[in-house]
Length: 276
Picture 1 (cartoon, helix red, strand yellow):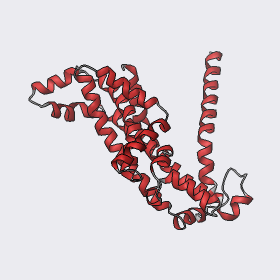
Picture 2 (spheres, rainbow, N blue to C red; picture 1 turned 135 degrees about the horizontal axis):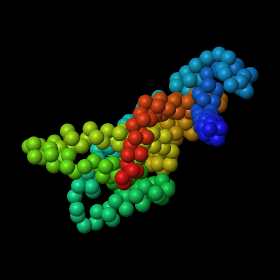
Picture 3 (cartoon, rainbow, N blue to C red; picture 1 turned 45 degrees about the horizontal axis):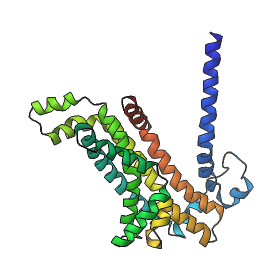
Picture 4 (tube, rainbow, N blue to C red; picture 1 turned 180 degrees about the vertical axis):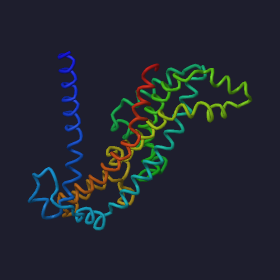
């Protein structure tokens, strides 16, 4: 009995340590710019801000192109998420419900592409985009992000489709439903955790990407937040407070988004792993 209590206490202590270790950087980046110009230097070691001043946030929003960067990142992330969810769903459905030559080669090829470092994908993609005339554009950047998120989406939903009995579709067909109707009305509701997982992953990866944004975009009007924030650091006289405010405006929406869909994300990962 004592050993069981001791084990539980140890687990709780380790869990608390992991939580603090993971959450503290996010917390510190968020509260630091809220101290204001005076408190940023005087209270820099305090764990709690003595005042809440939005000066740094207002400065970076009004004195730089940060709103443009934010809009570009949001457009690219939403487009990447929508395309990844739709295409990965249909590709995974075909891979799990049809038998054809080269199916395993296709799936393994996509997984290999996902495991490659982003820079190895960015270089040949940039050459292709220059040939097609879509370099330095949000369209080209979106395609490069999809090349990174689509293999993960296919891998996850492919495992997820395998957990859904084929008999459910057969029953729908016997009731007069077409293949698309069976997919939309019977299979899709069961895929919601997996779809949400793929969507959250795709949005976060695209919204926070630095490598592809650095390689694919050169003009100021097409820069996304990570690239724009790095440029602000190098080309302006703004203080660290403004830069931390910009970082906070990147991190906080991601944390809020993830907090709402955590249970679906975990369920999608575990369901795809059990029978995959």
